[in-house]
Image 1 (tube, rainbow, N blue to C red):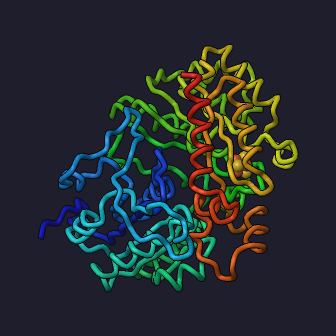
Image 2: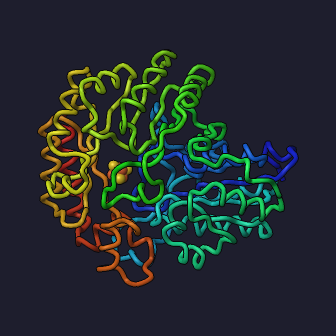
Image 3: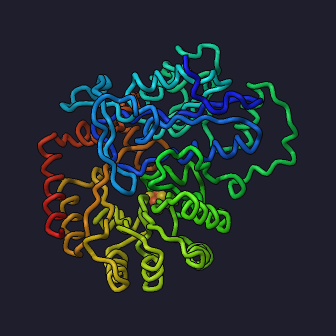
Length: 461
Ligand code: SF4
């Protein structure tokens, strides 16, 4: 059997980190990068562990060379479609007349890759969306079959929100429910029999939250983060719960990383994963932009997480243009004035001012994308259509996202308490599934809304 783990000759303990597949009705055309695992990799390496990372959503993973069909085309910036395999739909949402798929590296190739690895000493399986939990379960089952004696951790959003469910259904040996790095290192050391003095270690986010880019195979784009957390408390969002308030990271270190990967490795696209990139812009974003502009980095910057429209004044718009932001995405979420008041982050005038400022700075309106949520509580189909028309009247593109009720959030908890069975299957919170079973929005109606979006956006092309 071939052993393709380059770390197998290194002394010390090997930890295998796994980002499993996406299980859903449709795939995100994403930028999706396992930022949490990249950060974890950097952290564990700095404490002496050897790391191997398997990202099942890596479109350029070497194992895909063995794929016998045609691989989906990738866009220049690294986004694009995934390979997909039909899988059984979860029982709780089986009434939805759509195909359910495993997106990412095909199962047989994932299995082959894992079988050919040098045996790890510990395996950590992450999870992103709790409604994809069956992919975490299937991955844990697979690694336990291949490496029955290796301890397996489950971490990420799903075990954090549904710890009992995860222990019962996925059978990991350990779960990690918080982002506390000290707690994690102590646990990992204990499992692997390592002892060290923890008193002198700086476990702060500011010191440790930097991705280990060595595992990003596809360098057409890299994710980056200049801060963690968010000052807002939107009733549908899990970020404040998981990450707390805004904390800036070390800007010099990030500028150096971006410059290095741009110059040495030719990376031309960077995607900001911050949740609040423009918060405290005078002391955070502007100094960052100034440092980066001085380095004369030749790259494009994308904002998959969307930006605070209220912060985009004339100076910000010009800075974004100078830095070469591409397709700026702005948060809007809903045309509903009550919700806008509740969120306190954006209203109609913030959005129209931001779009005007960006246009004045040289962006085309039709290159801007505005996030609109579909499926929020008390938001009917007409409200979504009104929101789409409002964005279209401003000349910008609609970026429709679908609401999922997340446990622990204000909206999520009230919906779960009212409508969900006790000890519910997390797959019930699948965005498309939720819209269908909760709002009784059928496939036809769903497609109608998507068609309106497509039609309005195509008017701007
Ligand atoms: S501003 Fe964005 S990240 Fe912050 S709480 Fe609202 S939705 Fe979440």
